Length: 119
Image 1 (cartoon, one colour):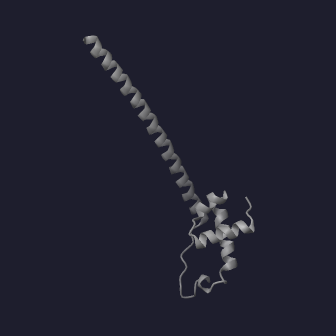
Image 2 (cartoon, helix red, strand yellow):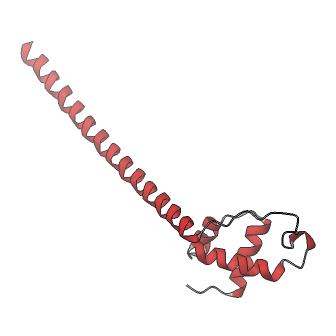
């Protein structure tokens, strides 16, 4: 999905000024995380010289190695898979809790009947 220049500027502002995460921005703008990364990076390239403190690293500093996008995508996919597995597990637990409650109700009714029958 294409985003407008205005949306990209908004993403950049929220990322740099409000500390919004790429994931949060992707959800807010209904785009993928890589789209947000590209938009914020493009805005960064436009604005880095506006403020000297945002300039690229000086020669005496070492840049941290970039994480390959394929690794970021793989981790993002794994997070989604684990979240889905958690949801399924919670649903299964709730179903088992309902089954257990039904068995307890049946047991109580049978015990009541037995007590009345023996009286």
